[in-house]
Image (cartoon, rainbow, N blue to C red):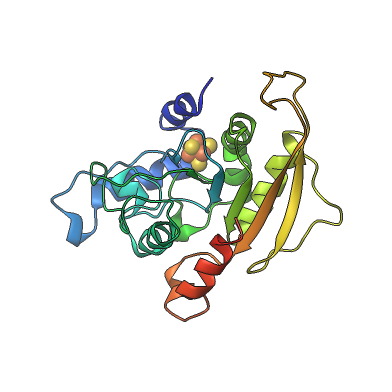
Length: 235
Ligand code: SF4
């Protein structure tokens, strides 16, 4: 199985009844500004390089962002912030991500989410986070080129730690607390298979925390462009 297979399969998932209802009703109701556009209204797959050096872990798609465009962090203010920062750091072809077909391309980075469907009020329930966990597990198992992970927000931090433990990665104890620029290191055991190029050897994955790029944080100045650039430079 490849990351592309995971993307195709997750976009068909209907495991969470409340989120299926919400993502589809938002797609029918639409926001006035987007009345003329089709909405995706399905789980939003991960976005970016299929041999990533860096993962970016968010929370969940926004109702009128990813749930509209079908692309992670695309079509809303939060997406504008993270794509612009990735562009400044040389990971993105363009400073904006507007819609599929806009020419945006991520190099070395893959954006993933603990929850792939837009939740009401941007708040998935614990059961919904648990239901979506296996998709994140699969990302970690398949992304064997990953060296660093940027985690946007405390829920992403918790979800990533839980997924890492489920797939057998070593996580420091006591667990590092989430905070902006918080850092920890996971160890990934070898899988026993060697291709002669280092696959199968234990490796370390640096994990860096960052306040979420939500409007609540960026409008209030809790997260500035400089703060975002600084944590990305740690990856
Ligand atoms: Fe499936 Fe995840 Fe969406 Fe739930 S949140 S329906 S598990 S893709």
